[in-house]
Image (cartoon, rainbow, N blue to C red):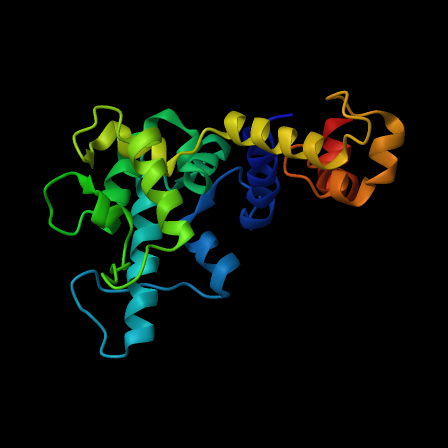
Length: 225
């Protein structure tokens, strides 16, 4: 089963919980009630004095913008497919432009439509008297070798998409190799039943198998049956 499959199953369960009047549609008010126990409406053009409240206002407005973008038919609410697009825009093709724009708004500090290495690294400021920490070296390597395909020192919108929408298949493959490295006791590059049982805690909590979630997610279990 893919990561996308699990995301879709989770969104389907959420849809039932959010759809308060069971009309096969989730309205913006229903979303607010489920999330905050009340309907919230912020003025888009009026900033709040309290920093924490202002941060929440901006987050709420961002959610509303994503909700409206997911609503393809401009109806009063989101159907199941649109709700999935709202909850997981990175998994839906028609939301790709929104995902890119949202990433640019967050990371493109100079507004040139690209994300430079400095912007990619965020608030990190290099100390010339010390070597860069390991995590910075790893992130720089990812920027240069994984994302910046044309090697121009910045991420264009398509390159940016490969960063903000990770390749789940690649992640799963890496995790599978990690499991083999940790659990393959006889070094045959395979996992036997005995090896799995010997390391069942690691196996059950692995992102590659996600068996732990399947075993405990009653909704998922019955839905699959």
